[in-house]
Image 1: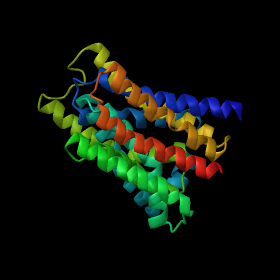
Image 2 (image 1 turned 90 degrees about the vertical axis):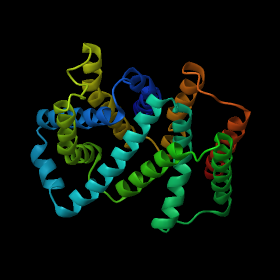
Image 3 (image 1 turned 60 degrees about the horizontal axis):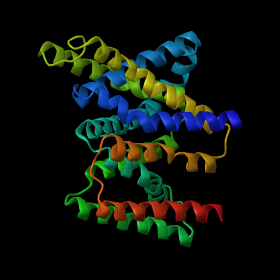
Length: 284
């Protein structure tokens, strides 16, 4: 189990410091970054399947109409999530992205109630209410709707809901998701290149290598997380998952000096209080 804990910590740590990587690519339009993330992730996953000789098993498990439809939906949701996240980081909204991932677990619980008819214990309604108050307060503090945070939370929450009923494991699932998005991503990047606005091979060597590296920084933490989830309790996974948004929040405030005034602190405090109550109630 100790190995699983370290895998989980490693995965959430890598996700937590991802804003640094996207900041290194901020001169590349976010949609092109996502195109490369899809393409190079699929290439790396294809290599893994080839080396481990799992293509036959993958085709047997994945090539049915139902499975393809499920993963087409999850690929769309994942692309929306990735695009929103990378754009927000490049545009200087790391703090708001962290809010999205702080409220995501609570939203996932609510989606479970609405779509899977799961039942909440009476005290579990309290943290959901507190988180709602926090989001509304943040919206009033910003002076605009926190659409980045809610888009990230909703897209990833719905992605988790779809994956709840998905039949494939992490490796096969991500391979199929990126495979379904591979051709549209390749077509878009080819179009940008023909129009003279493509970044790949038209910028510095370091930027080109960073674009290729998006495949590695996408697949490695996902595979680490998959290994961890199989060996440690789900409750421990739930606690450790807050490493990522916490690191994102700290990077946004202390490294990239994004604004975080008293009003935002109050709004975030409602969300943090909701999370403490939620997990405290679950432990009790």
